[in-house]
Length: 378
Image (cartoon, helix red, strand yellow):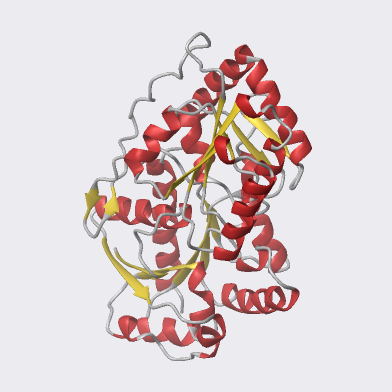
């Protein structure tokens, strides 16, 4: 099978969506498929919407199917029919997160809804990363969704980020062993070690976590923030002002963007992952954290509800509810037996979660069905 993957930017970008893309490429190549990654240069949103030419990088390709990371929709939403005719193959959208579901201004959201709807009506199938994403796409298309497969992300990727081909992380074997158990109650330090893993952008809700920490006992908590600081500079400045105004400097550490091995070490040194995002389509970090025995706290908005079982492997809060978050962190600090119970069940959840091999195999079967349907058309 000859597969094209159309993306914006660098496939080695550190984010859950690009990790998903890398795992899929690695799996397809391991099955003997030829995969061509086509990266489109970044432009302004409106500039992409106005461009109605076939990208030069696609003009000469010979493919059986083209996977389009849904982020590229503004560039190709109005040329997909022409592109399919030129390539003589079907196209499928790989959807990590609908643009129109992100927090943004009313005008921008309206434009995104219109363009994404046009785009998704132009593809032959969709790959979805969660049931939550399926619900959003189904609503956007008024229940007229194309053929689809739901293949959830996993967390059994190699944390050492070994390369295969063009910098793609390899998939771990399906039988890979779970990591060592978390530290025992007796060896747990006096402070609750809290970890936030995600780019520092508004939708991830770091301000909610900081507001929650304000009302805890300061010497009982420590927060590590692992993620990029260059994506929303104004929001990062706002976060730093919150930290100064609330006198949280001594309990907050910015670790920046970490390599896979450094992040693995970071998970091992912390007690709980908190990501109070207002719009997390699924949340690979929720699974990654449980691999290392960290219970996870997310919000009821988005796909976290598919992962987190309240009181079993973590907790869910309403978006923006820093008061409840404060109470939960205090509980976990004061009741280490409960924290250890959550930790054990988090690792159990990870062991029973689908592996990348499982999800990618579902996608490959879907691609083959889509090709067969395309080729059988009159």
